[in-house]
Image (cartoon, rainbow, N blue to C red; front, top):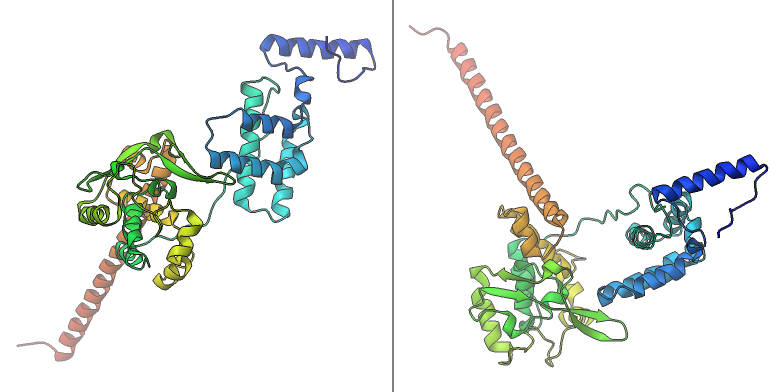
Length: 363
């Protein structure tokens, strides 16, 4: 038995309410108000715990977002009481308090995912209140892109020569930090022609480096290496990598696995990239650069997805769109050169006509 949420002025009003509820039951749209009384914070915490397939870094991010940006304002609100207006106000308060657009969007997407489960799987509520247009978009600033010569300049600038090829592989094989830092000798063909990605390193607070699967299902892949850099990879394997199949390909000076912060200190990364003329360049921008290189070859969306290790075609389309826009800019500039030539020719014709008029009739 369930009670109505309130009393009614008349019996007729009560009967009308009952008809509406019975109609919702018939259509399968009715939800038990007692089940929807669970606070969002408690439900979200349980939601994260019950997803063992999440990567450790993802779990760490979700719990930080929940603790820092969701629970303080929405944690005690009952799921059944959440409305789009409440969600919109919460998002606006985050932005007004100085939280970045990127973190706000991540927080919103987490709440939306949690409430999607409440609707679709648990049947706690009938409709997801996360319906704020554009709230899930981050619109990050465009990242810097290197030219091919700059990639080699950056590689040559590495203070430790054992890390030179790491720069080349990250760029020309479009690898994530966790993928390139986890490479073993067995993952690379003896002639340097291909690299197999099957695991990735993830740094988890309190646990150190965790070996796990790549970021996505499509992340398990084999990547063909450009012939021009294969000799460099082979030389690196011979010089710096142990003979065991599981020997790490890229390590610190003492042979241990590389951590992101350790790598930045070891290579004096901020100083090096500033001298290169790209201050603020991140290691991940090497992958971004490599993706653009690949897109500029005219590869199909499906082939780009496979090389990049993406399940979703949206990322591949972004790089294809970027290269098509660059191509259009080239076409526009070529057109301007043609127009300039026409103007020069017209001016020359005018000069010749004027000279002929000054000479007067001939004969």
